[in-house]
Image 1 (tube, rainbow, N blue to C red):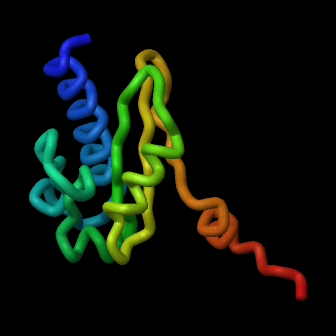
Image 2 (image 1 turned 90 degrees about the horizontal axis):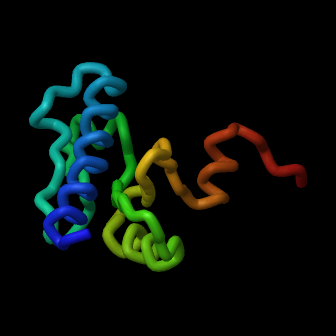
Amino acid sequence: MTIRANKEKGRRLQQWVCNQLLLLLPGVKPDDVVSRPMGSNGEDVMLSPYARKLFPYSVECKNQEKINLWSAWSQTTNNSNEHEPLLIVGKNRHRPLAVIDAEHFLQLTGWKRKD
């Protein structure tokens, strides 16, 4: 694939994430969830303060046929600042997957540690 095609593929995943957030987050408008231009530093999906309050994640998107998961996760955590890192990975003819920290995932389930 050409560099241009790779960037377009990545842009499609970012826009998919933005569209999903617009559908799921109550009261969020298109200006609240924006896909960052390809090649920009920082997280891939920019959120307004209102959208961030509803969705406290820093999103990195990778739409690649072969992905170095640990390298992608490192980039995600480096870009996350004070927000919880979230890596969205995509591949042709597959549904996107979300990657989050395992301890954070277990906290989300509501299970309490036995002491």
